[in-house]
Length: 311
Length: 239
Image (cartoon, rainbow over all chains, first blue to last red; front, side, top):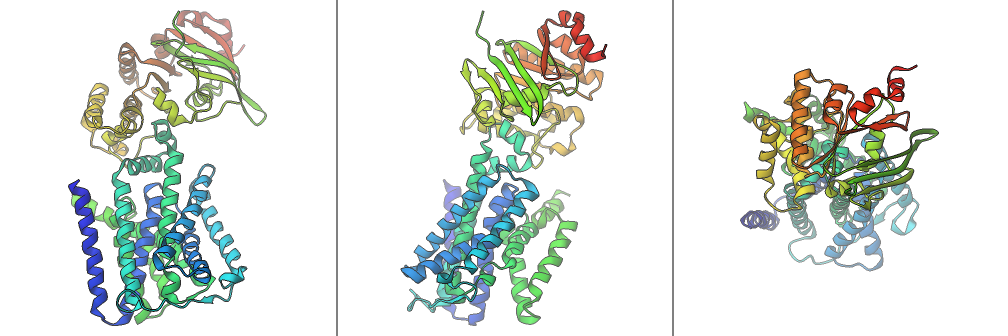
């Protein structure tokens, strides 16, 4: 398939570009900022598989992200396996959580589903706060492994996140264009009608929640090594819930490009504001931009572009 | 006599203390044009929901082509050939009319093989919607919406088509338009259950009619017999 080959090539080019940027050894802060933006590409893309394609709005992003991070913390505390194992394990634990959330969709739709995911996040945070082994409420210092494969550890993590972002976006794009994506779109539009037209809605929803959960966990797994100090308030931060939702909404939820656009724009704006104004400006910016888009361009930037082209 | 395509055997459905369907039985023969009527709230749509799988019956059995389908989820019943249209049209709003048809073609009719595109165009032509193929459902008129509902149901390749009030709120000529489509489908060998309040349409269309009232089956017969039935008159007009 030339299409798939081209997608693979594009992915490899992006990863290569990431490695090249990592080897430049520019101002280290830029790698930090870049890591966060890339992490948000993964998060927004993962959220969108459930929220955008299937139409189930998940407010519990912090739960999945933190599950990835704390799975990594637990493994670092016990076996200290290499980073790829941490990422895979974090993804799998969050995927299981996603599968469980998927069964909630049997009973809960719309707002009620969203409230349940929000509650899930709070419940899990409470559990972590009371679990001393992974640091409890005080948090835990994590020592990075010595000697990354190349560069210093921050540039290495930056490159890893480039790779994860490519994997997430490729997966989202593949799902969107497959029969699964079309079935998800049908159930987003009308679940009852989709089921009556032969779409196995439950199975597709479970698929979406599981894949979405997996990728959110994957995004969280390198987090302990990135911050080197993990505590519940930062791992379960409200920022993730708000950004995961705002970025796809601003970019456009019906296509894989939307979350990427949203994450790059909003993520960069936040990083810029953190440095130039104050770190408290983060969520303020998101809030203002989100309200503006919901009112003026409910289909996001992609919708705006489509409308302009249509005329 | 041929075995029935659909057999409903003593189906019961309760919502809390309210019995919506009380021991309903009926047979639909292959190729038949079957009418299901009754006053508002008599249980017609509940029965359809039990047959299509949207609701699980509390008692009784439902057989399709001789096998019990009571435990199957709706999408499996669709794949067997039981397809319904909705009383209030439920189009896939983010898709064009043509894409709306691709969903059942892909999921119910073809498995996942190719050939769907040609079929979708053909169905739209047969229904008379081909001019709107690339529009979103939001821009359709009432009758076009009803036609889309039927076209989408057809794309699932039904053996049994359940048309739930496909004509409510339409003008006389529009009713004739839909009726003509349903007659054509019947000629193609599709068994049709028509649920309708427009008596002129049901009486003309149906070979056999079952009447429900307050969850009970009160009459069955040809349109002529139903018109002359005392119990039916009472159910609709009161004493």
